[in-house]
Length: 358
Length: 272
Ligand SMILES: Nc1ncnc2c1ncn2[C@@H]1O[C@H](COP(=O)(O)OP(=O)(O)OP(=O)(O)O)[C@@H](O)[C@H]1O
Ligand SMILES: [Mg+2]
Image (cartoon, rainbow over all chains, first blue to last red; front, side, top):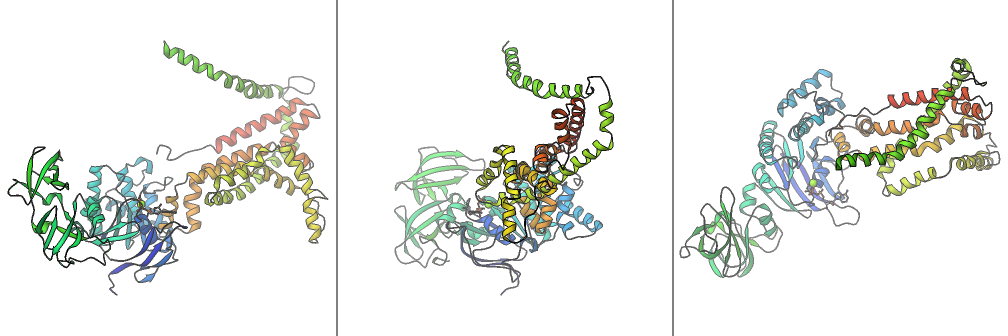
């Protein structure tokens, strides 16, 4: 086994009472020094994975390894990980300095070491000079930084972040995304970041785990996941998409919307039913004659950077188009796309059964 | 116009409460002060205060405070873990109801019940007999006095502590453990400081009434324990020395006010 692996889940199941399992036989490995994102809809088990790693809960079945050591039964206070909680969980009866010093005081470090380490951690998150502030005197973004400082001051090997940005407004959020990514690079430790915002996940991660109903649907780099979603769920969740039922006629040839198209996918059964994905930004507006597909514009929305057109083809399929060109409502237009823009997905929804690799 | 009518009607609503306060709180306090300056023959005097400062009454004061302290301390010792367990149980509200239920029973009834339980032929002694310890004198001891008082007061200690624990954000406990704190450290550094307001409220609710107990002292402790409460009762009902009774009451009122001020809530983080 590879010694870059820091966390390993082996057939981990978590179940409360007789409810269906919250995590269902999940196995994965995570490497040292990378930025991982757990992405998925509400209730899919993201927080549960973090709590299992942190040691707040124990798996019902399966094993969790940390640096190759079995972690089952090791209490949270004995684990080399720290957490930034969704609500920050800062201690309201302690000021900023004491919040950050909390973990160091437990380790019984001497006063001077604590002082230097706390100041250093606060400088890391750009909060010098705020040592004596009370928590309720800090803004949302500042609190979040205190929470990060409180965690990293203990020099954990893994930092767990549970939707730390969800309470912030858009501008601060974008700023913090950048800062967090920067922080991870500087510290060189593993970050496991939870979010249900796909744009955030795409922007920040080395690797994304897309979760659904207690299972990992797909893991991969942001580009992999965006460009080659493994199934309808991932394609839908990771961004706005056109997902159209089709049929794989032969290698490199697919039929949908009543027409036959050239594509780059292969390895399917002849005439296998499939779902095809085309991203809205991969569709170009042209004239009816030049387009590969003929559609009618149903509505148009100005989205700042581009127009969002909602069109229908003759078979009644809906096509979402992102374009800097404008078209009139009711206008008949053509859509052009490259063969590479077509992503073919098997109807079966598990990774093992996936074919059609390029 | 409508503004003044509104204000006017607001005062109207306050009348029942204000008159209640005036009749049953403020007037009695003034009367107590007034009576404390008269001796048994009805002469204006400061003798009552001089008498209070003699060893007899000072010893009584110390003993009152000592027993109130014991009762509060034992209540707290039992109530805190109980409240903590309560927040962890499944049917919290049911358990809470069961704990509050005894407070709906008349105090006198409960005290009489203990007379039966602790008596020479009571339940406890019957049990002692069967396991061969033999009959023990339980009634009219310090132990039975403190025991019964703790039993009576404990719901008033549990309730505010339970509320404070319920309000505590559970992720703070996770956070403490995440930062390496053992269960005990988590309790000492996070849970206890954050529920201190509940503890203070509970201590007030137990300490202040236990300062002036008199029924339990007489029935359960057989007047072996003489507190200021007993003394007030004796002066008003037995010796008819209202002046002296009122003087003791004045000291009790002052003591209670001081306790309220000292344990008053100095709150952090209210602005959150
Ligand atoms: N203590 C518990 N008892 C019973 N069910 C629980 C418990 N904790 C979590 N669950 C259930 O586990 C499932 C997954 O919860 P989890 O907190 O991991 O979701 P999540 O992916 O973090 O969602 P969100 O994005 O809303 O935070 C949910 O359906 C939740 O109801
Ligand atoms: Mg969550």
